[in-house]
Picture 1 (spheres, rainbow, N blue to C red):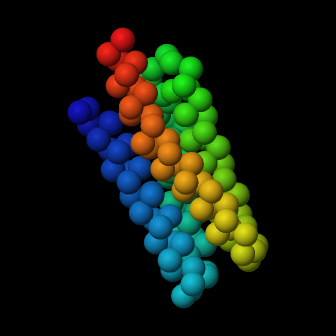
Picture 2: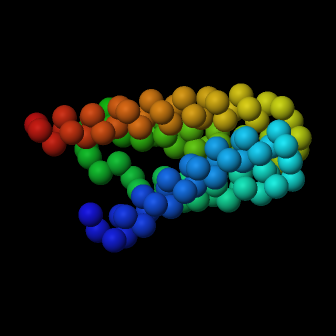
Picture 3: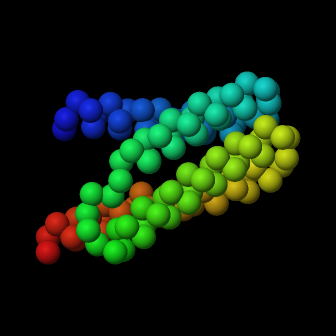
Amino acid sequence: MKPNRKLKNILFQLSAILILIAAVVYFFNTDIAKYVMIVGVAGYTAITFTTPYPGKSLRGKRLFNIQILAVLLMCVSTYLMFVNRREWVVTLLIAAVLTLYCAIALPMVYKKEQEE
């Protein structure tokens, strides 16, 4: 694995962990959670946008676009958290489900594309 790719992977995982921490900390201290969420979502968004789908299949590109939608929902969730709206939980949950689906399906699609 290239060092640049390794660094992106570490930042991606760290950003995801920060988003989870922000969601939990919000119920104890809303001020800290808001800023942790901003840092996590900003990192997650940056890594997602700078790492496009490497394959050519239509399904893989569609899954990557779903992942982009999930990132945008995370941004909406962060905004809702800042304006003290409870709906941030729903948008973050939808984003998490979409991200989980893409994390499972994208590697399978890419592997199948490489075999063909």
